[in-house]
Image (tube, rainbow over all chains, first blue to last red; front, side, top):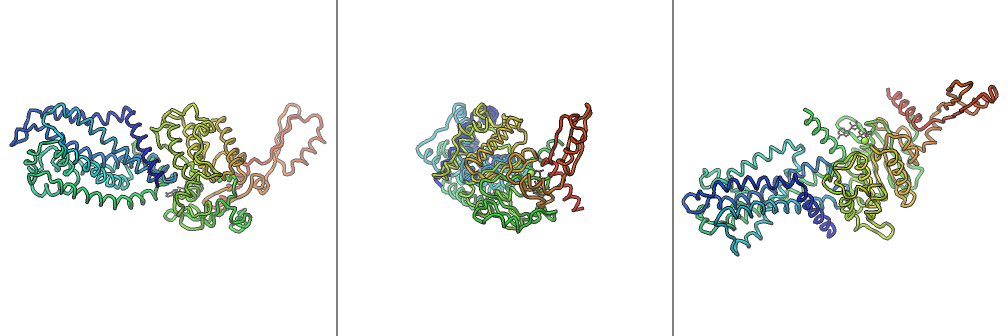
Length: 280
Length: 308
Ligand SMILES: Nc1ncnc2c1ncn2[C@@H]1O[C@H](COP(=O)(O)OP(=O)(O)OP(=O)(O)O)[C@@H](O)[C@H]1O
Ligand SMILES: [Mg+2]
């Protein structure tokens, strides 16, 4: 058990180091950061309607919250699909305690990557816009919000990654996630949406992660433009905790089922299918 | 013609010496029987070669023994446990080299072996020290010059050597090798054969391997099991198999600068006659017993003929 923990952690650290020294991977972190910074740059002179607070500054924290959700949901699920196809998971299955170490390693490396890309957005972003500030309460919020964000999204990401055999079908999972961005108050205020859309948005972690990150970086007066005019920390914690429970209940069952089915011929069949689609 | 059945496969070895014990194994995909009553055993330290045409069921058999696939019926015991319910401690005693891998492309060779080795450390015992020290292992499989290279940049044969290295990093008691030498150059092949001998002689590793290289099977295997259409059509040493196939022996010679080839039932008698008749005129004499390849082809053709 202890040694499984150690192999998992070292696996995560090695993968993190690899991705940070692979130019193609670095580009995938830098690209979204550049887009975001461009957007914020053009928003910098606009104000949040009804206030004199910079629109760019108020958007940035929400985008960081979205980044947390993306890391947990999309990066985890995509890597699972890819590494099932290339046989990394089968290798884990062939190694004692390999599966649990693999999953722990994935949590560590994806968590690390997500934090790195967050910093790549936050540090230059904070220089571009005025008004971001983290008080003592903000730091405290970060301490529970970030781990909770990973716990709420990574198991769900792992479930998605186990369900989809074929990377192309992943689009079926990714499109709704993008839809979720639109209704979660990341770029447009959720208050301007119809009530039923607001209700759907508030079912998922994305909205709450955006809200939580805004509560960390924005002055308290900005809570006035949120739903119920408050940061709603209690509700944030509650909804995310429900997702944690849901994920941690579903993931072991689905992952075990997926792992049981992994075999050399399953990997070979998947590869052949991939080759056939590429040839077309 | 079935040379072995469930009974005599079981009778040869006492139960506690069987590292692998398969009885009446069946595997069915949909309505197709891929394995149809397969029985064989393997003893500690033995090299068992599983031969057979493409699609015969070799990989299926190996994957069932590795615990990667659930069988439809039959009894299977590997290192004393049922693979379907073997735990992590059981897994730590196995080494697996599957037919093809592409995993861990971004990792560096040495880093990957080092990392995978740590999984076996908790299972180290006084008799079997695990894992295999990385530098020694790299040397054994001839990957020392590539130690710092990314796995995805290895050539096909180098990648295969890495697969073998990963298969033995935990010093397994039982090693499964599914077509381990595809893509090996002749020197690598020879080194691999030396490695197999070392594993069985020094560490008493039991090895189950499949290959399409019959020379290799002949060199490495103590016993050969031939699968065809989901059934075992032969089980025995290369010598035993060739003796059971009543084959003709090929005799070649030259006389007066002309080449002759004759297939004889009784080669010794034929050659004696040849010398009595022509004496000093005979040159470049060669007598070739059935190679494993001839035996194999004959057995497989017979089996297919019988099925038709
Ligand atoms: N998952 C599967 N579903 C259906 N049929 C399968 C599956 N896996 C294997 N088969 C079939 O089972 C048969 C045996 O396959 P197997 O891979 O065991 O052959 P093999 O002896 O290893 O062949 P090769 O020499 O080509 O590696 C083949 O006819 C194959 O098509
Ligand atoms: Mg095969």
